[in-house]
Length: 396
Image 1: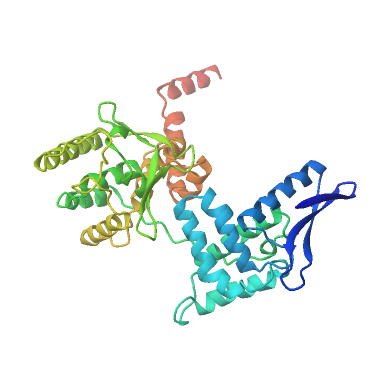
Image 2: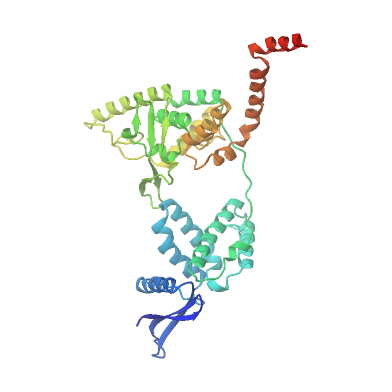
């Protein structure tokens, strides 16, 4: 038998797995694994362990190093279950920071002090020349990666507790949000008319869509008669250079966004211009084609769009305004105009209204004062107020 189950207590079982012959002694080896729960839980765990043995991802408790475990975690959990860009980020943190520093430590011997020392070293020595440490946000990403990996190890029963739970990562400082006002937008978009990205930047400012959503947009996603568009997918470029399309991450991200009349006009003109260019090359524009693309229909590279935005922003005198700040600018202006936060949440695709309120809390003081002023206007300046006051005075 490749494995068998032995009852140890009321809610405890031991699994014995045959590891084959030892090359040195010629004796058969066994690996014991404890499972808390019912016999059905133990049988399920045995099946999982045998599957891991078959595909080479079995982790022997007490012997596997953190580096070995992290590679298995990347292969078995991260790449099959997460978006490619997210998986790349975890893989980078593992191979650039975690494995070089802590990879030789046995997984079961990993302690909170190992992690705390790592974070301190990363903040002081950095990654390349040793002259400057990593930012607090980068070190926090390292902590998040390790915490998720170790949480999975706890779930699998490889370790009893997560050492990262006992460690406080550095708290990054939140940079003040940079946004455009109405005048900034007007000047910026006027200058954008001299570039090929006018319609793209217009849509970014007038809808608050993410860069990945804008560049994945197809003509079939837009209804210029009803003045609305559907956000259903995103585009990403991997470190290998490969361009991938995928569905938006959450149900809230998949949404309908209403367009202003001016935005519909800009998009209609953009389509007409695109059709003329295609015709000059003997090509036909279809509804499945990308709204923003190269002449041959291939996707625009996300980083090239960011660079084009930065270049235009510097010309406008808005060098601190990033492309993502178009999203913040759209939301801030809508809230200042009294649009309900729930509507702003739906337009931006936030998973909850709390995220919207927390992100744009800087707008709240002005909204509070405006609301207080409107309450005065509504109650004290009502046409019936003076008449009713006079009636009350006459009664007395």
